[in-house]
Every structure is written in C-alpha cells, then in structure tokens.
Image 1 (cartoon, rainbow, N blue to C red):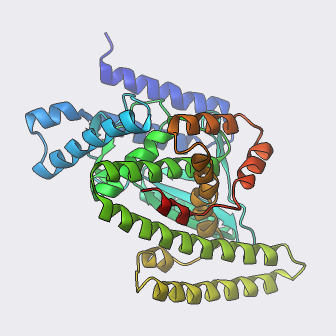
Image 2: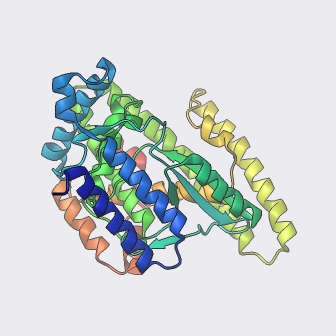
Image 3: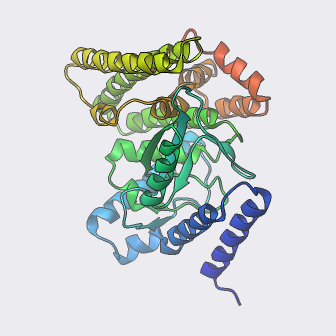
Length: 365
C-alpha cells in the first residue's frame, strides 16, 4: 500500500513529467529542481492543528499560526475566498524565501522574457527553489545583454494542484502583512488566466487590499487602516513615478536613435528618476520605505516586473466600486473578464482606468 507522503511524491513526479513531455523547450534540470523543491516543501508540512495541540514548535511560531487560523477563517467567511486544503499545514523551509524569481528584458526594451508551461501558461518570471541557481541563470542572461532582476518570494500558489502549506517565510511579517499575504495567495484560487501575469497579480492585489481593509475594520484597527492608507498613497506615488520612467524609456526605445544614443538617454532617464524619488521622499516627510528597492538600481527588468503587479490594480479597484464592494459580484465580473480574448480583456480594463486611483480608497471606511 502506498503511504500518503509517497502518493504525494508520485503526483509531483507525474505533474513534472507532464510538463516535460508537453513542453519540450524546457530544460530537464530546471523541471527537476521544481519537482525536488515542491516535494521538499510538502514533505516538511505538518498539520497546524497538531502543532498547536502538541506544542511542537516555539511559542512565537504557535502564536503566528494561531493568527493564521483566524485570518483564514475570516478570508473564507467574510471575503468568500476558497475553503480549500491549503494553509492547513506548516512547513519550515529553513530559508528566508520560498523561491527566487528571475525576470529578464533586453537592454533596449521593456518586454519581459517569457517562459511557457502547459498548465501555468506563459509567465514573465522563472522561479527557483535555490537562490544560487537563480543567480547563475541571471548571469547567463546578463552575458547575453539582458537586464535582469532576481528577487525573493515569500509565498506562491500552486493553483489547487497541491494543498499549499503555511511557510516559515510567512511568519516574519507583522499582522497586517501576514493577513495581506494570505488574502493575496488565496485569491489566486478564485481565478487564474493563462498567459496574463499582470491580470492575475493585479486581481490578487485588489482582493488583498480590500480584504485587509475589512479585516482591520472588524478588528477595530482604524488607526492601523489609516496607516495602511497612507502607505498605499505613498505606494501610488512611487508606482506613478516608475510608470513615468517606463513611458519615457518606451519613447526612447521606439525612436530612430542609434543604440548608443538610446543607451545614453536611458541612463539620463534613470538618473532623473532617482532625483524625482528623493523629491517624493521629502513630500512623504522622509518616509524611506522604498529605499531598499531603489538601491537595487533601475533597469528594464525591474521596472517591468513592478508594472506586472500594479499596473492594472486601479482598473480592478474601480470594478470593485462599481459593484458596491460586493466581492461575490466582483468575482463574477472578474471571471467574465478572464473568459475574454486577451485584447478584449485589456480594452475592458483600460476603460476602467481614467476616473479612479488608489487614493479613492480613503472614502471607504
């Protein structure tokens, strides 16, 4: 008789084998590390209920897991997020991130490199369970003249292929960020569109923000919500700055200038962006929450990666307003958008953009 853990292992092997057979352009080493990483994660997972009952982890871990249980119950009951088998177990990966994502773009284009898989579709990032492997691949792209960006990810969703566990990487967050992370990842189980990373991530970000608003309101954390709103405003300012940089770069890249001239103009635009960022910080009273990200430098890969997660958020937030913040109606509308051809979907989202911004969230208390 096959034991439960071994059955999971065979499922993973079949899953990865199907990827390999259906996607001949993918290298076997990469797929193998995916299988090993997923298997390692699942083999470490232990039921949270048992951990809390038997006190097999530290008090701090148990406290955080108790919060997660409450947050998940709230997500299901108040946000209509899926009551699945995910986040019922805990796994300590003994590292700061679940995976490291690599994104790459040509040095004179904001178009991100894509990697395609038969189940997930085409995505604009490539995930590694090992940081060294991600950086080695990044070095290969750099040698080919690409701009690259490698960043750690604390959580990811397998879209109901497996029961995703709570990871130790979650537990370094404060209460608000912990709730936001869970709302975001659980929302990926509502809808997922192949070949449209921006749609998927912007939808999840919108659910995350609305979920956090409701969670803090129920917790009577009005002051904390106001702090979150302030951070959202600052985030909107920051992403507007990055959007302007991308717009300016696109004008240069599409021009008839020689490549050497384009590269010089690129340097000037990026230098100007750093000066504008310092000006923003003055308006924020010195808030430096984006300093660490800016210290990594600006290049096409980093700029486009940020657009992937935020560019369509105002459109989704406007759609949520139109249904009077009824999440079930919102999910129905989003699923309808997801069923459209990509060009029609983008047109619908663009039609939602003009009259809404993140600051409108202030009116909803």
